[in-house]
Image (cartoon, rainbow, N blue to C red):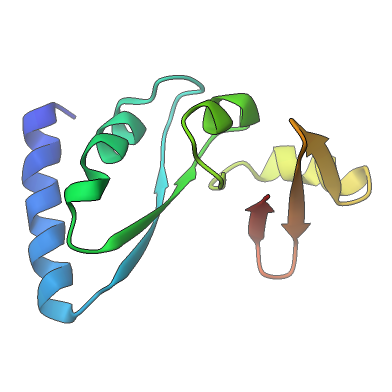
Amino acid sequence: MSDEQREVAKEKVVEQCTQAGVTTIHTLEGRQLENDPDVEHLLKVQDSLPFDTLIYYQTTNVDEAVKKGLTRIGGCILCYWMEILARGGQQRCVNRTIMIQPIMGNCIYR
């Protein structure tokens, strides 16, 4: 997706969310382990949006998420989480903890 396409998509989302009274969007972003263009773009524009955004970087590279100042990871990374669950349900990384809530399918990175 080009930057122009991202901008058009962003404007449509802003319009629809504003009309619906949305105040916060939880968004799964990313396809690459490092410097994903979708994550980079959202980080660049998120302060200009008329609502809060909570970005869940779809990566297993915790260091990359931390480097970008992100406090959440998530997405379609089930196999990775199953490995963590097999080791007791949490993993220590960079003085932070990834906790798994398997019933809800949520991952919390603190």
